Image (cartoon, rainbow, N blue to C red; front, top):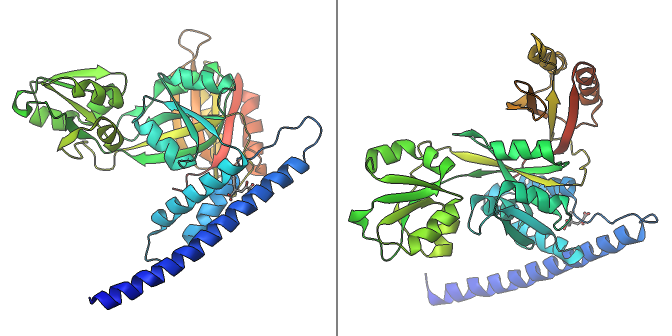
Length: 364
Ligand SMILES: O=C(O)C(=O)C[C@]1(C(=O)O)C=C[C@@H](O)C=C1
């Protein structure tokens, strides 16, 4: 390519950037107007709701449907995700607590869902995320709820039994684990590998094959594992890209998870009910009396009404020995007439039923 051609193309890019800049600014001014309208239409004592997950899902879906390339749909939606995040920050900067420390996959999930223009707050434990939201210190919390290899995150399910929370969104993240070392690590003398118990389990076969005699040490998070390795010469950590970048570690081996489709699903928790979008999911907790056929009775109304169950999980209830509660996710919104009917039917048979929330299916 000649210098001349390159110069002409860069001039075109400069002109386009100017237009993009103008349009983004116009969009941001529009969002400020939206905030003004929301404030003006408040009833006495009503609190304004700036963050609208159902609208955000709609915007991102529209972008993906209309995108004609060459950028991929996900790439384009990620760009719009960040524009919207910045526009919302003009209306109201959101505060989001997540399972920390900095560099965890939960932080990556929070950024994927809310974008980077939020004030994020790392918490030391799942229960602390719930408490921070319950106390009103943050608008939303982000917690892991299930992993495709290792199953349910029980701490999260149990926290729902203790706190009154509304689920207002979900996000799925592909989890890639790397074996990380620091600049002082003697890579032929590694005698200890740190990681979160779930991550050690997700890389079990790889570790058996490559480091069968090395001690595996479970710590509170992958980011904590990465932090420890920085100060030691004979250890390595299993963690993801964010932790590697944050602690300046290098990858001795990449993508060492046993299953290539290893993914984790995260939930956004808060106190805000989300209106239907037409493509939603609902999460409920149900406890049934301890009698034969109770689970069957619970599932029949879903089957009879053609409602898709996406997940069912059992946990010991807090109220009695050998009694259980069921966590159920299904497709639909609790305001849909069909879903309403099913929930009414179940509540006639159940000891207790609680709707944890209806929220848009993950777009990104
Ligand atoms: O439509 C709204 O209610 C807005 O506040 C605008 C907007 C946007 O930038 O598109 C910003 C924040 C909301 O979470 C949803 C959408």
